[in-house]
Image (spheres, rainbow, N blue to C red):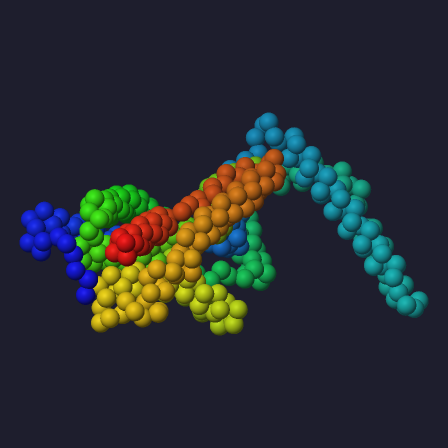
Length: 438
């Protein structure tokens, strides 16, 4: 075992050790609460995105039918022939009735003139003679204005409008049921049930309020965790010439806390949505708000699980590589540094321990993963922003307000803190080794 030149009962050393232990315990407890809050926030955000998914709004055929039905009902209820619009309405009805009479007359004449033999043609001529005697289409067409007034008077009756509205809505519902597929609301209703809600708007409001509170709390907690561990490392750097065993143990524990928190909590959130879409249909406004086009919030372990669930060989290989370079190698490096420092059971001479403790930095790829996540964020952010901008300017008659909510999450910054802490710890171990050799 390695020995140290510092007296074992040095009060300053004991005080520093107790302070460092208190810092680590505080950081660990806060990190645990932070992980719980971040997972709860991730669950809330995912459920919110599902409730506001475009499938249940803008792409929901049933909702469109309801909106059109409301517009038709409003149009029929508000319809009234007044002195101002009566001439126009009457003129249109007159044109319709006159055309109808002309078509009826032509149809009857064609029917009566048709026949395959002289008997049928004779019967047709007799029918035509009777019709000409009983029906004078010229006189009927002359009375079209009278009929138009009668139709207008009938349309002005509330009972007639109610019947027309009922028939139109029934026809619309029948057409929709025959031609449109129903939206699967299983996931939607499951979330409402899990949240104890009966209506989606109230549920969304409550979840958004809780999400905002959690997000603010997680940021504050993450700052405290990082600050406590930073102070812990600052105290150790002040005693880097000796690097007592208890300090090495505490720094190792703090680094592993950052690693566990970094891989367990979400690192990036991709959120593309339509805040508002507005246009006019039959003179009535149609509005859709908070339509989520795409949402994902994943940690490193979540990504590994998703890749493994695909059962595809190439995806499983990627999952294994991510696990190896972002979890196994960094963990092995930190633990190997601890074992190398204490020469636990003579493991300092073990080639594998020596490799991970002193020479595995370029193989851990943790720093590369941080850069990869940063580049992925930049790429997602630019791509989504470009596509949403194109959507917003697609049509001058449609007002589209879009939002790109892609952002790096707390997990990314915690993992970045782990990378920095691991590098500092490794440099302190190598510096001590150099002093020991010299």
